[in-house]
Length: 292
Image 1 (cartoon, rainbow, N blue to C red):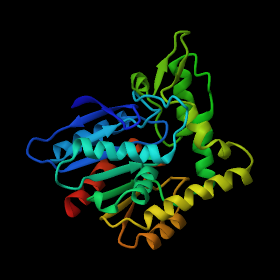
Image 2 (cartoon, rainbow, N blue to C red):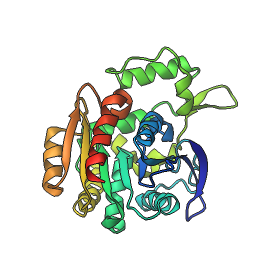
Image 3 (cartoon, rainbow, N blue to C red):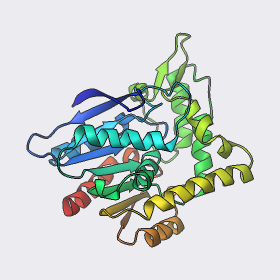
């Protein structure tokens, strides 16, 4: 794996991990979810590379080791353009596969609206559909906006994360939290994402239901329009315990993208790859092996 920095068109520096496979230039680009970083994909990226793919995982702006937006704005157009930059930087002849979880999947769908859909050789959406469950979306935003002053220690942070993911065993070793938390000069541990990412894009979801629903519907309309332009082989991977993607939203997705395949991963919630990476990676590699 090679750690790299990629310059976005507006001057933002994006952190990326590059997993080259010498004999195969078929590229898979991995986009993490909101509040995560490229490290959420490490195990999947290594397994995909071992299966013969060249893999790129990068931190979205305002996340992980990528720069924060100086103006505190995280418009979808910028997120899409960052994805296109990664495609230009790492892809040669073949159209890459793109795998997007949650926020990453939204970016993938929006990219289909803002750029030619033929840019992608395959699309994998991980627990995200154009029309998601409103209550599940509010729960995610509430978690990301909580504890703005961070935590006194990693134990406290682990407790909060365990309460958010009750189906996942609480880790005994806490070193993995270094990927999502950083320690300030005063000793407190804070999330590795820009709080403005929530306040600039999703603040209404924290307020009264009517205001949040209006903003949510605007996002849904954009994602539905993008999904309607998807032409590449498509797979929707849903966490069977997800409160964001339901059987009803999956059914609506299949009406919009009738050529898509769908699968549920049992015992997993919204963070499918983290809950059961073995099952997730097997599903994705099988799909890419059949379609690319």
